[in-house]
Amino acid sequence: MVKKEKSFLKEIQKAFSTGVSYMIPSVVVGGIFLAIALSTGTATDEGMQITNSFMQNLNDLGAAGFAMMIPILSGYIAYSISGKPALIPAMVLGFVANNPIGPDGIQTGFLGAMILGVAVGYLVKWCKTWKVLPTIRTIMPILIIPIFVTFVVGMIYIYVIAAPIGTFMDWLVRVLGGLQGGNAIILGLVIGAMTAADMGGPINKTATAFTLALMAEGIYAPNGAHRIAVAIPPLALAISTLIDKKKYTAEEKDLGITALFMGLIGITEGAIPFSVKDFKRVMPAIIIGSAVGGALGMLNGVEALVPHGGLIILPVVNGKIWYVLSMFIGVFVSVGILHFAKPNVVVEKEKEGKVLAKDMSNSKIIEGVGNENGKISN
Image (tube, rainbow, N blue to C red; front, side):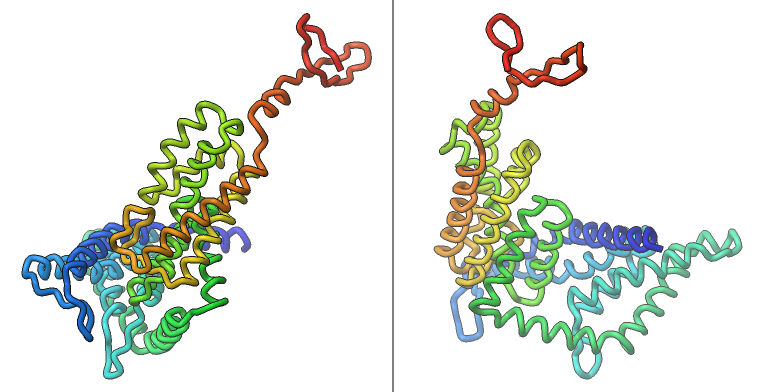
C-alpha cells in the first residue's frame, strides 16, 4: 500500500513537472512580448496605454501566449499520465478553467487546470483498459475517449468543483496579493530556499510552478523573489572563486568564470559542479543566500514580469534597485559562508597525501604520511 502511494505521488510529481516544462515557452513568449509592448506605452489611470500599432500587435501576441499557458499546463499534465488521448480533453478543460463560467463568472485558473489535468489523465488511463471490439478500438483515441472524458470531467467540474476551487483561488489571490512585512519575508525565505535546494530539480520546479501560477493571476512579487534567487548560487560560487582563490582548484576557478555568466542570465545550474564536489559546505551556503535574497525581494515589493532571472531581465522588473540589491546581498551572504566553511585547497591536499599501510604482523591499518624516502612516518 505504501509503495502504491509513493508510486502515485511520483507519477503526479512527474506530471506536474512535465506540464510546467511545456508551459514555460508559452509564458516566456507572452511575458517578453507583453513587457516590450508595455514598455512603450503611456501610463494612465487605467494602466499602460499602448498607442503604437506595431506594439499593439506585439501586445496581442503576448496576450495570446499568456492565454495559452494554462490549457498547455493542464494538457501536458494529463499527457504525462496517460498519453496522447488525454492531451486535447485536458487542454479544452484547462481553457474552461481559465475563463469565467456560469452567471457568477467562476474562474479557477491554474489550480483548477492542474486538478482537471490529473482527473483527465487518470480517467483516460481507465478508458484504455476497456475491452472493446478491434474496430471500435481504432476510433477510441480520436473519438470515443476525447468526447466521453471531456463531457464527464467537464460536467463534474462545472456543477461540483468549480465553485469551491474558485472561492479558494479568490482567497489565495487576496492573501498573497496583500502580503506585507513578516508574512512577505517568510514567503520570500521559502521561495528562495526552494529555488536553491536542488538547482533546477523537482523542488526548484515546484517554486517555479507556484510563481508562474501566481503570475497568471496578476501577482508578480513571488516571481520577483524566485528570479532573484535563481541567480544567487552561480554568482556566489563565481565570486567566491575570485575572492578565495586558495580554496579552489584551477579547474574550479575556470568553472567559476562559466558560473558568472550563467548567473548573470539566471541559470541556477551553474552552481551544480561545485555542489557535487563539496555538497555539505556549498549547499547550506547557497540555500541561505538565496533565502535571504528572496526574502528581501518580497519585503521590498520587487516584481519580475517575465519568467526568467538574473540581471538580464532588469528592464522588465518593477523595483529595479531592490532587485539588484537583494540579489547581491544574497550573493555575499553565500560568499561569506563559503569563506568560513571551505578549507584551503593546500590543506585538503595534505590530507589526501596521507597513506595507509597495513602491518602484516597484526593486520592493523596504520595511517601516516610518506616521507622523502618513501617510508611511512606516523
